[in-house]
Length: 304
Ligand code: CP
Image 1 (cartoon, rainbow, N blue to C red):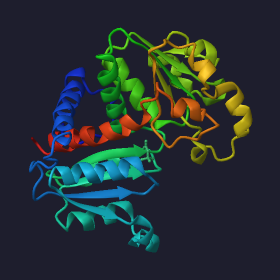
Image 2: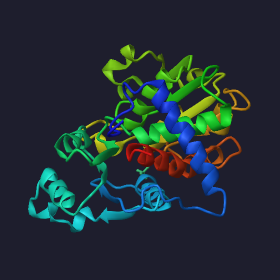
Image 3: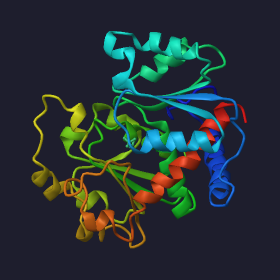
Image 4: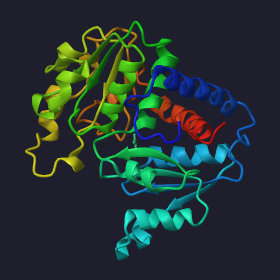
């Protein structure tokens, strides 16, 4: 594995290797020694052209725990605003002896473009590109499911909400399909499903109550308003009425079902606070596991 740009096409062996490696880092981080020297002397550049709280911060923490030097480029204060192209920015950072780029961009394919144009020794990780892919989010979601449910082979899983604009949903579907989830449901209004959903090997539901019945895992998604320019949006109240996960609706899932959300959450739109903060929620553990998973991805790409 040279770059991590998407989970599409990655074999189960590689996905499992990443999850197993993350398991090892999780036990390191739970002990007093929180740092390992695996990336000592490496320079990692975080290039976030779109806002982020969880991904950017956990990549930074993960890189520091691997003893790398981390640079967070402040895009709004960078020479991008003077017209410098993405590839010129990357070429200049490469001239500063970058070893790895972590890239978030609103354009699908931005990380691929960088990966095609960097020197052989440089690694690129896609931290979310448009509505295309968010592979490390998909991986930390797999880590969370495996942690709470022990595996994937007996699970019924529902992904609920704005599938159409969600790069997270695509990465989740890729990973769950590869890892052998026998019943993967996507639950969304028709207007928030991509045309290609029929070919994704998933079961499609258009009512929340039916889609989450007897599932082991409910993965909620927010409305990606920033990718819906010009679309006729439902009001938050209207969306919540039909698609908001409330304690009553959650009772339709299995009693031990876990509730996940990649964040940021819009409380009172796709999820009720009583569910988000409830006993079945594993939303904050997802964030914590993101550190170990990102440590695993960076150390594997660096050749460890
Ligand atoms: N899940 C996720 O990508 O969150 P951020 O946008 O805060 O990074």
